[in-house]
Length: 241
Image 1 (cartoon, helix red, strand yellow):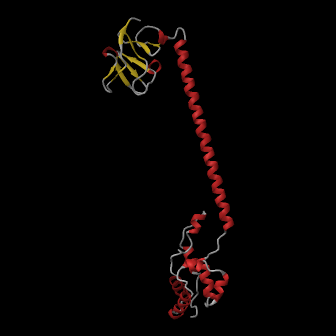
Image 2 (image 1 turned 30 degrees about the vertical axis):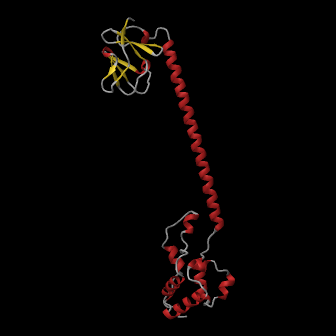
Image 3 (image 1 turned 120 degrees about the vertical axis):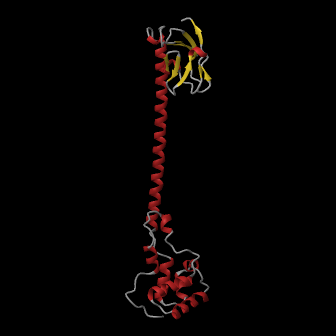
């Protein structure tokens, strides 16, 4: 085997690791291994190039591996310590090969990291579920409050919206009475045909037009409640208040 020249350097695996990005989980650590399909001869040639071994010495080492039917990294990786002893390579070459194909890994640490990640994922899902339930509860309470408020406004005596006059709106089941700006009273559908918004609370009278201020749909009271922009109607008809 040729003599090592120069100031040397780390092993092939050390150089391989140095070129890899920093990692934090087990999946990334496993990616640092040399690929199973890599030829053992290629690894030996790289080791020899790092240490200025002669090509003849490298060829001899490759020949020894091939005589033992060791052609790839995968086959080197599965060798037991007893099998390594039977291979007629110099101790240095054996150590470098073993270090390259089976680098030390702190499996206990990896196991702890996996456990920690699993726990964090579980806690995150639990928090997301809790937040979702709280939002649903708040939405439900908000809808209940709006419903109660609407009922209260409809039933309150003296409510100005129930009185006749321009711009007044009076709920009547699924219909409402609306007084236009010219004093004419119309009876129309209570709910907007767009998103079924309650026009008794969201309707605004401007002149002879009833606006749904949720999405700004405009219905002509004096034209059968027709919304010309969207081709929908609230079926208005003149009535006496």
